Amino acid sequence: DLDQFKKINDSLGHHIGDEVLIEASKRLKENLREEDTLARLGGDEFTIILKDIKNIQDVSNISQKIVQAIKEPMKIHGHTLYVSSSIGISLYPQDSLNAHDLIKYADTAMYKAKDEGRDNFQFYSPDMTALAFERVVMENSLRIALKEDQFVVYFQPQYNAQTNTIVGMEALVRWQHPALGLVPPGKFIPIAEESGLIVEIDQIVMKKAMQQFSSWYKDGLNPGTLSLNLAMKQLSEKYFIQMLLETMHTLDFLPQWLELEVTEGQVMNNPDASIEKLKVISDLGIELAIDDFGTGYSSLAYLKKLPLNKLKIDRSFIKDLPQDDEDAAITKAIIALGKSLNLTLIAEGVETEEQRDFLVINGCANIQGFFYSPPLATDKITLLLNAAL
Image 1 (cartoon, rainbow, N blue to C red):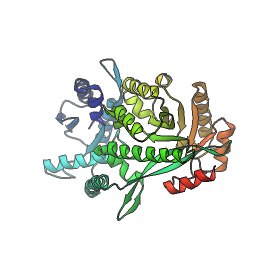
Image 2 (image 1 turned 90 degrees about the horizontal axis):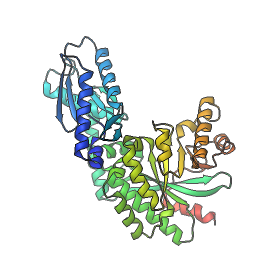
Image 3 (image 1 turned 180 degrees about the vertical axis):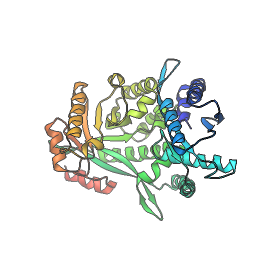
Image 4 (image 1 turned 120 degrees about the vertical axis):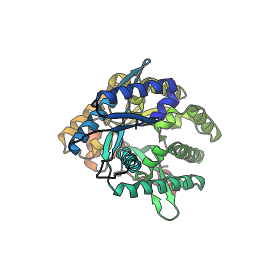
């Protein structure tokens, strides 16, 4: 399955999507033997039958070659596209003697590959059937949660470590389940993304967070800038900018209060179209930040073209500071890069005084993490803001 193929169709049109399918088919064929069978099941799903396989390692080797081949950049009608694949594998006769079951099991394993972050392959195992059932139950529960308004917004304060003042908040979704209590995002976000429900959830988070920020400002409080994560599906939505403007207008929310966070992977999936849309957003007076910086595969040439205001250093580089020399060197390099591009810097996942001091000494004063505060419910943030007056 080609990961997030629908987004290419939605943002660039079906003619580009068709060319991607043709190129993917060509790459698949190049990595198979003459005796193997390649078929397109429909949409962006392909089925491969490997004949006379001697051992599982051969299947792994072919699957890895396919994953690598698909992820090479595709140049199509002036667009440079980055596509990845998720592969599920079932084995005859170990998994089943029945063709229908083998296809079903491979499909189940493919969803496991998607759950593991996409761009990989997974072999079927019987426990995946139970997981697939859980997935269906979870998706149905998410649909009910949307209808019954079970999603709430928590805010994690962002501090200037030199002045010890709040400069902004990141809005984070939580699911207030009637039976399970507060469900952490790691449990439901991957399924929400895969099912497309993430767009609706993000719109709810956006509206609730903006409404709360407007209320704080009206009450004379200063929560700083609202940081919202912009999902890949939102960025490719045709009417996203129109919806954003209407929401801000309805809630008396000013553009300068908002910062949208995008990840490297989102931008690099279709850099030219992303840059175009982000420039429109930037021209509205909304700030833009690149999230999880250093973990993706961004081209520095494209980074320079993006209308960015802020660079967010990923927590994976922060957690072992200052002891880990490699992470220390990478963090210093990211700070130097941000400064050379005149970007504001912020580090996420800061948990210790030593981490904070290292960042401040090396030029990154903006801090987000448990050292200052975990994500908090609205009432607790209100108390924090009142105490700062």
